[in-house]
Length: 204
Ligand code: SF4
Image (cartoon, rainbow, N blue to C red; front, side, top):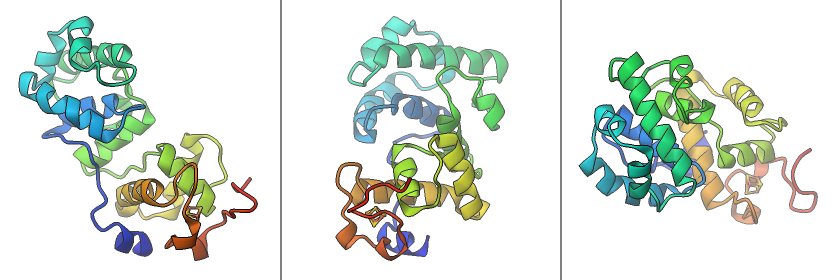
């Protein structure tokens, strides 16, 4: 964590948002879509529609038109409209604060719930996305092959108050150095600690 903190001092979410609801919408949009592309979409979107009530009043088709620069936009528009309606009907118009409640919202799985908990509410969460999964396995912090199990292994490695920082720093490292196709092991700040070998590939 100290090495990564020095390497990526500003690591944090790249999604733009002003409140937990906007973060929820941005996080749903971010599946299989870059954060930069999500920000391009949410910039104008959040000027037109701001609250769960605004989004709940849209049809999925109307919202799809607004977000069609994003992969899987038809499914995502359905999720966002349905999640907004559920937030209004079941949670008094507020994005819920527990993982269990968050995961009752359409389009919200374990990873998205963790992002909202950790980033919007300052809770302890260590969401495992594709970068966290890859880097954690290469480093030898987990040998598991499903994100939920990798998360379980990772939360044992970090103090609860460090979990979200670990999430952001592992993502930063996965983007900058430990990339999927060609990790830059020669210049990597973690190479002395890492189990990955360029000759042998991924740890089993
Ligand atoms: S040494 Fe290579 S595989 Fe290990 S963390 Fe660094 S870039 Fe990734």
